[in-house]
Length: 398
Image (cartoon, rainbow, N blue to C red; front, side):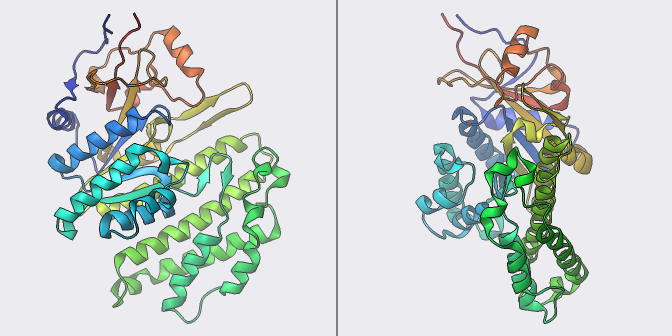
């Protein structure tokens, strides 16, 4: 028995070069950022097909970089391996990813392929890897220490007088464990975010960020400073400030606390992706891979017995900033789109342009899919927020 998929047009992904070329030609503008969203983490099929999509985009569409939902600082280790062979692949899989994504075979395959491509290409046309997630999980955030001291170290190498000394920052940061206290997730009183140290650090961080901003023209013209160093300093600045804002909300008792936390994380994702896109613009577009709830244009939401939250995801921020230069493809699988399902070769995926989509889910299927809290399935309401759907069907049960 074979599934009948109620879609009007589509491109067979057994020929991904032709399918992706046709899809991109159907868009009103060539995207600088192309989002590819998986409906749930932990299903190997989605990152496997991400790799195939990226390989095709690199070879035929001029894409030179990929950014995935993983810690932006850890991603620098993976980037160093991909671009210049620093470390071993085993070491990079251990320290170059967050959220356990280093254990995913498709991520290992991705870095190995990118390293091989760079061994063959001139450096200017090499492919680059980025993480774009801040060091945050939905109800957890790192200490600002790493980002803040990284920013201070950069500035101290080039300026004799700064708004604050390193010792004061270290003293205010204190023990990292108090920032990462897991009890703060559900008990705001356990968060460090409302302490005098945290409030003072926000002021000092803003002072350093303002100092960096005022000195950017001189830094850009100074011999011995490469653009990547300035880019990383700006990343450290916005990450430190973002973490301190996040911890402040963790410490609040607002009824909108969860929505605000989720929104802050996605806003930081969008800032990182905008910085990546601006850096990569002279070289080519960037493929972005993450959970669909981070990349869709419309509002995201969680509906559970113990938690209800609404927030604007990174995709909504990117669409507002980049307009038609941001495009989003949602991924789906199985007969209940978005539910985890094993992907058995050789069932053929298809890429569909969103304007030609007819309803993908019945009301009953949609209710069933939405019961999976880890899943963000394509729903009838969300289809207009996508430019396309990459559908990975599985055979119907006999």
